[in-house]
Amino acid sequence: MTDCSGLQRLMLGGIALGMFAVAAASDPAAPPPAGALPAQEAPAPPPAKEAPVPTPKAVQQLFSAGKYPEALAAAERNLEENPQDGAMQFLKAQILTRMGRTDDAIVTLENLTERFPEMVAPYNNLAVLYAAQNRLDDARKALEMAVAVQPNYPTAYENLADIYLALARKAYARALTLDPNNKSLKAKAAKLN
Image (cartoon, rainbow, N blue to C red; front, side, top):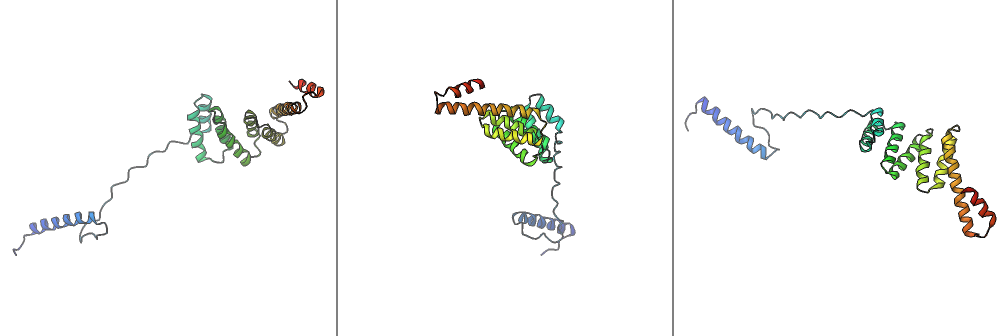
């Protein structure tokens, strides 16, 4: 064997290290060669800047402008950061209602009345949605809760009177189907129409 010069030894060592690196790449459990520099990981990309949380005012502006899908997305983003914000949850229910997503709005309002029973407006809005679905007993219960929470809430009383009137009409109509010749029932039913 011939004696290698320092340059040749360096080159042969580099080739050996290169071959070891190829082998190590295919076998991640292989130990690094003696004298090898530690592998360096590529720097992680900087985290993407997250959009700021929409303010209640910004959500309200989108809602007022009729941009309901954008307002809903902004409300949901706000609620991710502020899940205890009852006012934002109420606004979300209003947005859902305007979007025609009545069932989702009802679920949101029902949850809101459970979590924040002291808020009166959710009961009233819930009653309006129930009434639109002809769920008059549910509407009545919601409005009775509204006036129990805030006895000086005239809108709830007005809506409750409308529900009582609708229930009375329904009861008279049912009574007339059972006794269609009853003149007294006919007269009372006529007064309600």
